[in-house]
Length: 144
Image (cartoon, rainbow, N blue to C red; front, side):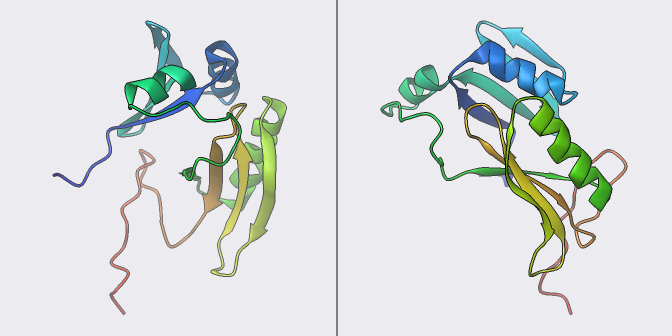
């Protein structure tokens, strides 16, 4: 198996509401057959009915809004951008669940959830610099 993620699919309870939320953050998606696709750098973010997604995976649909064990991360180029994005998420109808702070490792981050409770960490970590196109290349953490 190649070491790659190509799509992240979020199960949502209200497709129109979720699409509007991400569009309010400046994302542009395409809706095809009750599914919304967003280009997100080198991968795709997909919004699809939570119930249909669960069934498609052979799982029983869970209760919306609970922590699903996944946090998506969005790294930015400055502390100011962290604050701006958290404010934009709040205005778009998201919930800031952790205001931005410097964590014990020393980088600045906060967390918001979208209307379905999917958690997004927004971080400025100078140890993970972004390329011009927004991609990140993980450093060799074992190198001294």
